[in-house]
Amino acid sequence: AIVKSIYSFFGKKVEQSILLSLVNMAETVAHGNPSGIDMAAAFSDFPIWFQKEKKPESLQVGEPLFLVVADTGRFGDTHKAVASVKDAYTAYPEKTRKSINHLGEITVEVRKCLSNGDMKMLGNLIDFAQTELVALGVSDEGINRLINVARKAGALGAKLTGGGRGGCILALAKSKSHAQNIASTLQNKGATNTWNFVLDRQV
Image 1 (tube, rainbow, N blue to C red):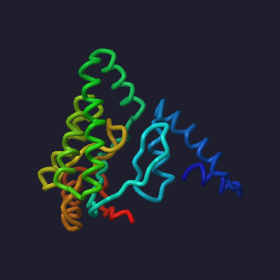
Image 2 (tube, rainbow, N blue to C red):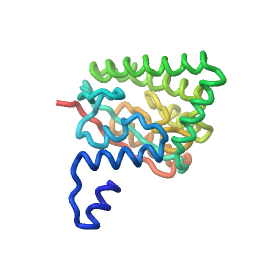
Image 3 (spheres, rainbow, N blue to C red):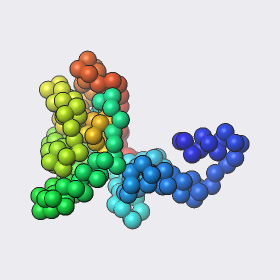
């Protein structure tokens, strides 16, 4: 959006290849060594299955997802979060490798749950992922507190979203009204802003 806005300000059109290159450059400055998933998702009009250096695939969603996003009010620091994982890998290679590999396994299972619409298991997997993110040191007290609020409000699962160390959390609700209730509870318990929305089936 920023790159497009700058071109628009000067009355210029930007070619897709140049836009991708400039966005990747900005991601590299912000994150150090970006995976490319943020850029791929931003350029896509549908949910995607992303693997680095592979073409994104359309991700099928078997049942509607009722999602809540809550802002901790603190800017996330992806660069520091990634650096902390690298430091952990150096200090505790076996433990860190185990957490990273488990996250990969969870991601594959999440894809299956999304496809067959198993929301209960999806919620469990989201919670499992958060446990590993805590172990990797990318979560923090503020994030964990809002995640606990969401879970106490009945969320099927909740985890940080993005790089961690601030930023936002994501919670899975049972219905639209439930998502609205979770969002309201989170805002009353300290989230600076919340959003709730439905991700429907991909046709």
